[in-house]
Amino acid sequence: MSDNFRAELRRRRVESNLSLQQLAEAVPCDQGYLSKVENGRRRPGREMAARLDHALGADGALFALAGEEQKGGEDMRRRAVLQALSVAGMAVAGWPLASASRPRKVGMDHVVDIAETTAVYRGWVSRHGGAAVQQPAAQLLEQAAAMHGAASDPTVRTALLVAIADLAGLGAYIARDIGDHRGADEHAWLALSAATAAGDTALGGHTVVRMAGHNIELRRPDKTLSLLDAAATRAGDLFTPGDRANQACIRAWAHAQVGDADLVRRSVGDAEDAFTRVDAASAPSWAAQHVTEAELYSLTGAAYTDLARTSPPHAATAIDRLSRALDLRGVSLARNRTLDQLSLAEALLYAGEFEEAGRTALAATTAAGDINSGRLSMRIAGLSRRMQPHTRKAPAVAEFVSAQRTG
Image (cartoon, rainbow, N blue to C red):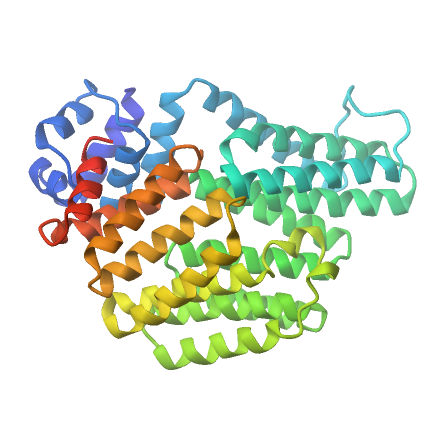
């Protein structure tokens, strides 16, 4: 383990006024193991890095450092992402960079190819996690920017700006999934700039809503609500019923994080009302995955799970909604399905159904083994901490927590 991770780990532990023993108890893990990690004699796996990050409130910084040091390919991927952001940013600003890889004549067929490939990558993230497609998506973004510089037809140039916005939005989604929150912000701002330059206010509004979704994961409810308000003010007339349903779900989750049950119920009602008017077949590719019935129950189930943290009677509603989400997901969207399983395990824990909570958590970790997603690792780490005080109440809970100790 290089000096970067060790130094950051120690700095955050000291700033948190935690001894090695206290941090080991919070993770939880063995104090001797943690000492070896901090001294560079042991290298933590993904799960342990995620638990250390969560325990120290590092918002993904430690997890990202650990990931970069575990695989030499991480540096190459990061360089590819930064290069793509630079080239695309220049193109959006009207200063295209020369590229030998761009075609001599750019037409709408090139735009269609980019859009179709973006859709394939987006589907991959929902199924398998984002790490595997991060570099290919960055290369496609750079290619789209180069084509924008080569295109002469104004219609094609505008379509390429929309393609850049869509790809940058996908880049933000990938960055969120691998725990790179700064990268997610960088991509989101590029997406918003490109959509604005293309005059596509609907896509710009969608991008701001996705930024709100990112902030709800980071437990920043006030910022989440302000972003949703900004999107509604600028693009409200352009949002479809599906968009409004999704936004109401995110609002419900934000209200849940501050413990306002009345506003949660009102927002859930708004979401369900809007969803009755959804025409999923007409949704743009960049919005389709957010306007499904499974997503409606997933997000509102997560909201009630958050309420149940401090008010356990809400756990029953959370369990019902998350169970419906899982039934609707099927088995194809593996990563999203596993996220729902983790939320369900947490809701079962608050309901006092300890053995079922442990079994659900174990099933989620088994499924997560085939998915390359930092977001999953962080969620598993947080669930392990919440289950730690209940290991004596159910064998499955003890098995789940024990399995995470040596991660």
